[in-house]
Image 1: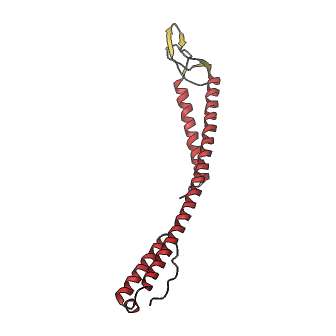
Image 2: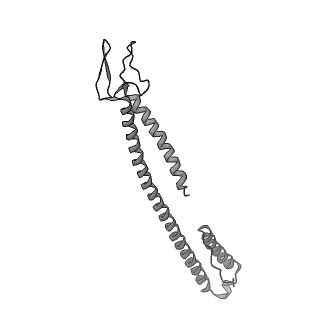
Image 3: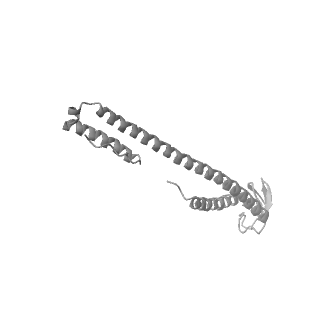
Length: 178
């Protein structure tokens, strides 16, 4: 069964956007706002206020805080991760395009294989039917008139015809029974 390429792309882009949002939430959750409040709590309220410490914050007391990683202005930090998310989305989209091309090629290969297998099955069934006919033609006339031999021939031909139908091919018309 082939999937609709447009619906697959829409689904993947929707999932990618959700992933990017989750990535952005995770990235900003890992960073700590370094604005010191009188209660001694470092807070992450609003990205437009203060600075962001990408490492860990060490409270030195007396309203002094040390950051073990790089310090960014909050707006620059948001822009940095927005750009990284955008870059990752572009890479993911390119990978999805490559995957789509591979799936198209696989679908074409599968269709070709099915056609070849169908033709081979039809050829085999035709050859088998011809062999059955030829084998019965070699029997003496009085034996061919026997109901048991006629039933055997009929059942063999029906078997081959059933194989032809199950492989999606139409069996060739057979000669009249003797």
